[in-house]
Length: 348
Ligand code: FA5
Image 1 (cartoon, rainbow, N blue to C red):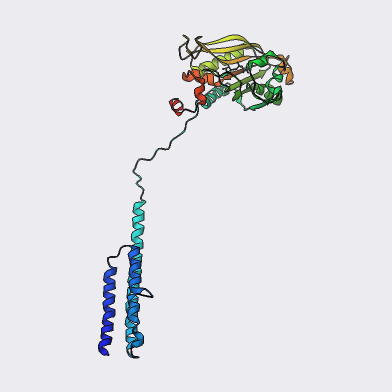
Image 2: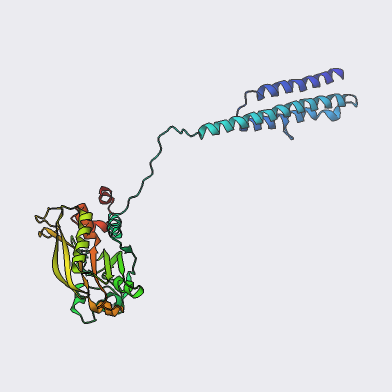
């Protein structure tokens, strides 16, 4: 019996040595779990199998073997725990190594957008007028017949309506504004003189599209009302704008014109920058590009908004933003602005 006991204790010691030897080189969680099951597993673990002889032992032998089993189990569990910790630390270090950021690497550049050339033009124009004391206000793109036409001295049967072919939203009442001029009426309805505003925004006309005409384009309206104001003020103001915008070398000319809401009226042309005034497709071989209509505010328009035309006078102008951008950046085709072609937009 003593020999059997010695053999059992020897087996337990050998199990402990073997288990610890096998534990040493393990370096993955999966292998560790497998080791745990093999030696300490509740059902088929090797320690459990050796413990199964307990019932067959004598009363004296049982505590001796029981103590040895416990000692082996405690030792194996302690080493298992230490190994688990070690693997956890190692995996953490590996993860940190994998995710390490090298702050000396060059950064990845984010694609940065740019202002659209039309937005930039609007900003440049309004800044020039802001320096001359004008405030910038916004109007409505969907307008009524009164503000777009009648208040501006263009009654229903007036031939001037044919100059701006209209997109109607509801027949004869609501429309997409054909010009920014309705903001002349709205501004004067809402404020007392003196008035100095510029109004940038989109306008719509049912037009044939070509290199210089779009059906949706932008205008900037200007309105100045005061007790003293002459055509010379209008010309001075617009010439100054043109020279600040395009440079002093560009030539400017005024041509007599007709608008029902200004009297007298004039259109302003700028010498074509593409051909330097010699004539090209863009300026329709005239050497000039019309950029705005203007004139002294008609007394009837002043009466329409309740201003006394004997006391107040003023001038107004409306310029085409696309035409100005074409002149400024030497672009020969208006449709490029709304084409969304990045190759074009990146060039500017
Ligand atoms: C008007 O729209 C008047 N409201 C301007 C005005 C305001 C006159 C205040 C007097 C007082 P006109 O239709 O000419 O005028 O247009 C003004 C400018 O818009 C033109 O000089 C041109 O630069 C631009 N423009 C006109 N039609 C088009 C179009 N289809 N595409 C691009 N730009 C255009």
